[in-house]
Amino acid sequence: MRKILLASTALVALSSVSAMAADITISGGYNFMFQNDTKDEETDSGAFASEGDVNIQFSNTTDSGLTTTLNYGLHETGLNSSAATDNLDGTAANAVNSDGAAYDDLNASLTGDFGTIYFDPAGDDVAIGGFDEYADKAGEGSDSGMATGYRGGILGASGTTVGFKLPTVMEGVTIALSAGEAATEYFGYGLKYDAGTFAASYVKETTNTQTNTFVGGGMSFGDISIGVEQVSYEDDDAAADERKTEAFGVAYSMGDITLAYEMGSMDDEAQNEEIENHKQMAVSYAVAPGITAILTSSEVDSNNDGTVGTDDNDKEMTELQLKLAF
Image (cartoon, rainbow, N blue to C red):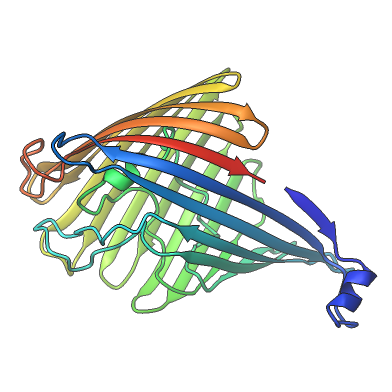
């Protein structure tokens, strides 16, 4: 990560004599991956993929104590998969493609004694965006293997949002709200308590047709960290689309080497059937500062009709990944 102070010489170069000096933070990363689905040994389903990220953040503090930030993230991914089927009957209605196209982040904030106001035209829900992912301990391997619109974590809005994070009312407690107006109306709120070695969150989100409730927590003791979470999701527009997702993860750090394991399942609550479960193991090695090698092995059992383990959507994925951070 590199910090640059926007001094007078830079202002002249930018031809902006009225601009105020701002603190600029630039960071980036690049991931190179090889993924291979070994479920069907008669076909070659291996593929190379890459993902690049550049993040630029401007910040400024006024004489009156107000702090403003502008965050711009450039993202490019080579994992151009087709949209996953999202309905329980396997149709493409409401399908989402979370790993396909390049996407950018753009958000701004205004902070004062009143709290923090977030403006986010990219739909990242920055106000409540850090309230989930307790069980995500073993990397990204299982994410690309989910075959039926896996519902985990925060739902998020599809368009521009305005968020508000309240000032601290008690040490360790964070309360945040998020609202959006796009194809559907969106409103979410969250409560998080972080005591250092223990943290827990509750998030409730609603749109015109969807309701998503997240509950999760985690704790760490020494070199071991664990996390659990549960997501309840309902969609009034999709027939019998009522799902509950549960996940558990644990990680053990041994200096430069970290071992991790996670498991989870997604149930069709309306039909009282399990539609998907996964388990995943990962070994990461910090080769040098800013360089990490990761080996991930994951297995996904998935079936739209509720008979887990008998469908072509099942996957056994192996992923090798090299991560570079700057």
